[in-house]
Length: 472
Ligand code: 5AD
Ligand code: SF4
Image (tube, rainbow, N blue to C red; front, top):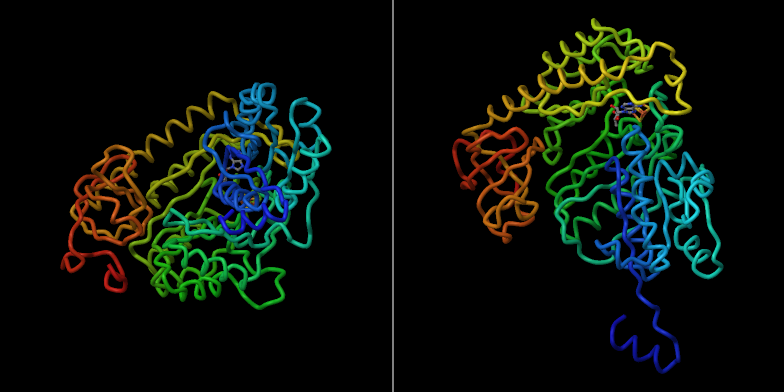
């Protein structure tokens, strides 16, 4: 509270609100990271400030993911870790996110020291729920779905941000119902935010120093469905591209079946749209894709990749893949390997199939043995490791535009940033470069990053696109 306001409050006998601390642990996807940020913005209004140290927190919230078994188990071990803080300091303990949505009251039954379960649509209710706990000692559970979409309402940050990039959710939920996936059950059906609210948020972020936004949605290609206004995802991208002060736009995730020609063309038309797409394929076998209910074939996926490469030859490609889906035989797995060799992804996120309660695939009988799944995952990851390194090596000697994001983890003399193709680059430099676009010559490719050297903007060998359009 500013001094004058504090003095007025004192004269009026108003007690200053006590500032409290909130600690949030976040698991899972970028959407959870964004939700955590929204929760922090919301809680500032209730005088909760963020702490990175759970031991000094008055409120501990675990923002959970249930998309696979591993992140789901983390929730219970985290709750175990925080039990003593409840006993020692009386901290309020809550669970948010997909596990909260899925388990609801069962979580309260199972964990006696848990105070709050808050589902994916209930975030705006958080301050009221906290009051119920603080003032009435109630244990609370809120997991209703909200068809009005209030959970998507904008919560703007209050002060300049100390970061150069930010997520912005543009839609949430999914209508695809892939047979293995829990998302439609825990995030609900597809619901888009109005373009006006999104634009306002991005403009506000740009004014606060954000240079890059990543637009989030479980299926961004479905953006606009159900809105009163006539707008689709490529239209939204065009409008965000106009926002002053913003340098870069990314988005995730796209569904291959919904990837339109217009969106593909956006990569060649919009200067701020970075040359990278994350396009999960999940399997290279048509039989398995059908059982997964994915709505495309290996061939049609490869055709889309071809169109992307034609529209934007420098485009970087990443994807998700699942091995060991029920019924997957050796020849199906071979098809997956064939697809990844044909596309040559820049990077790949690979998972063993994990049975999710309530999904259709949970009822499929022909489960794949754990050992087979593990072996297939290891083979696939080994092949991809080679491809990723080769793709990185192809950049050696080239000059890339890099947005400087901060100090490098490895050395105090170095800063770190990403290329337009989303590759991490470390190079010598100081923090005055933070938030700036610079040109970096790639000297050495490592398995997960690149090492470079800053060079001039006028370097004639600049080979990445759109070099001239930004202020240095
Ligand atoms: N088992 C394994 N992987 C899964 N994914 C989603 N559901 C499952 C599951 N049941 C993976 C998919 C998806 C990514 C976010 O997580 O590859 O694209
Ligand atoms: Fe899950 Fe499929 Fe929707 Fe992706 S498209 S969120 S995998 S149901």
